[in-house]
Image (tube, rainbow, N blue to C red):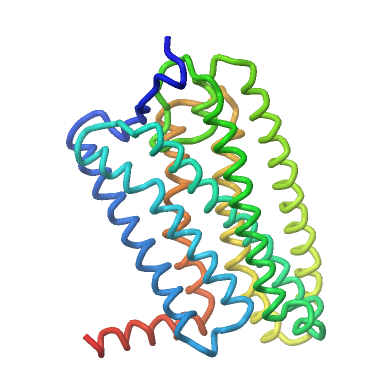
Length: 310
């Protein structure tokens, strides 16, 4: 038995048992990370350098790419290090930092997806008021509110989680530091305080989800009333990538944390955690660039200019 003051490090769940599989997982994580870095980096460069892309939609997309980069850079490097060097250690401070930054980027992504839904709603359902409701100042305020809310959420949860006394060892059944796994190590009823905070966060997350659902109901009703087929196609091209990203983000997280205990197993839990923490940052740039011709052209222009300079 130990308490939190005597814990100097945690043991993370290994991605594989054999050395060959560990190296295979290292290569897979490396490939996914490079894809995420390249895709999101290209979107950030294209939006930042392309003056014709300085619009609310691409401004929020740039912020979303930043959250994807931050998210994958928070969890994957340590997992790659552990797989390559056949270790599972993470320091107590490193675990707290990893949890904090992962919560920042995860929360910011969800808030930004909600804000982006509002942008889609106004552009399609209230196009005449778009310049007023979603101006440059309003965009900056909404993005700042999303990041500030994410920072506050992460700070509260991290501080509360690591203030709990831990006496059930230091083994986390996860490849990165996560609140539910740390709570399992708590030996005090004070963990109920964190469950209360999680319930409050879940309530606000549900509110964002209901807003997204309501907005898309209104959006699809408005799109179906557009007389021209070209207009409907353009509206769907704007909305479908965002809807796909929201669906991927929410479905993986919800299933990973709310699946029935009867089907739970360490290997399934590990696969689901990789699915919601590692895969979306690599897929999001692809999803957005496939349907958006303007973004695709800007990305290719950025690539061409880079090769021409080098």
